[in-house]
Length: 401
Image 1: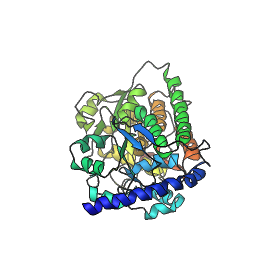
Image 2: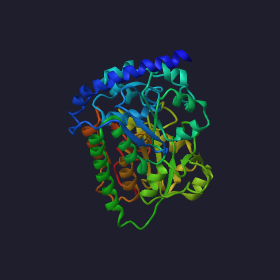
Image 3: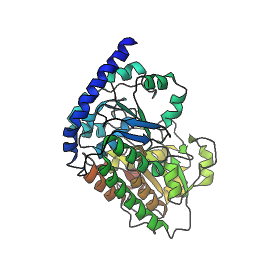
Image 4: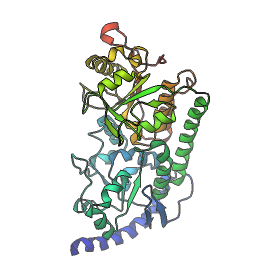
């Protein structure tokens, strides 16, 4: 243990050198963040309510959630140069996103990516090896760490943790999380610009919802076929927040305690929801619905047809027969762009009032301005019927009902 603390003393010396190098980093950042370099030290209160002070902009960040790279990439011109590692990388979640980000940020290929299959946080020994000067983690980790010896070990080693949230409550927590990251990274102007565009896109949703009086019933179908055939659903977080904001009646709300559970298929048939929103991602072909970077619209349509075909009673559901069955990229609520999902949901629930919303253009605009990769692929779709029956490979752009 003495050797470990001795290494931390050496790290303090390195940190001084890192602070001297900050002027060079700031010059690079000015290409996308023209404001003057922010002042350090900075004291932050994160989303877990804990206070932490950073003496200088962190240069060796560790991402406990690899999906947080989307936020870092939106705020920094070269996020990998400021990272010591990430837990597991994006490869298992989204191999195409990983490939595109690696092409844009070649150093990502060599970034240490230790991790575990059970989503457990790294132990102190592994983290010390990576030598982080800041850990960024989901706010849900805070509760876990309160009863873990790791928290005391990290405090003893003076490794701060910044808790953010893009997943549990995406609409409420995205802007505060971006502000925290902007201040911590010395990228406040960039964070402000992104938040302003997100606010503008959300205001467009507010405008179209102003005249809405009816609340369509909605089934949120999380990753159909991935763990269970039917049907995992959000109760009071994640997409449930977006559906509620878009004036939808989530049929899972109040059915069971907790944030996620499995709904009885018979209950779904009895409720006959107006709209079904299935989350989709770069999951293995067969059983689940594919969507995301590089996915063809025809593949998403075929997967949706397979879901309908294998679930008893689903062809007769109103949402399926009337154009209300939709697929939505699962990654929206894992990064800072959940407002795009909100626009898609609002358009599906209220096609007349919200017809002017264009979530695809919103996504492309955000990626053009803030991301180092493009957003080509399929990120939302409406079921157009079984292609094998009617030869239809429509991209699902028609309005429901």
